[in-house]
Image 1 (tube, one colour):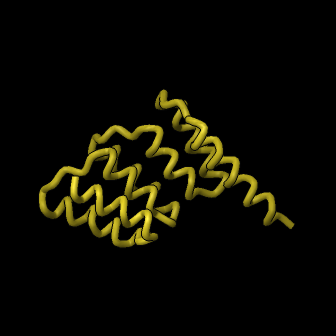
Image 2 (cartoon, one colour):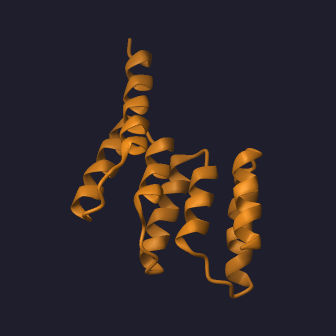
Length: 116
């Protein structure tokens, strides 16, 4: 619980690198991260690559991703990745919530505004 609390504080304080370090530290100390831990770290991530890698890591560690996990990836993703992640949610029978849809639409809108 202490690690999760500090990781959540990292998200609030915009310290995503520290949240990744804390996750590594947990594993080094033989502490088992939970879906809540991963969700907090992914939400803190500012790079979609890091968030996506954490989602893959969850799957290899047999930690079941939930709607919050996918939403965290979508929130940091390009519109192409956001659409792909939404599609993979349906394939895994995880229904996107309004947060996921809003994040995907925001990503699409941001890219639309940058178009020439």
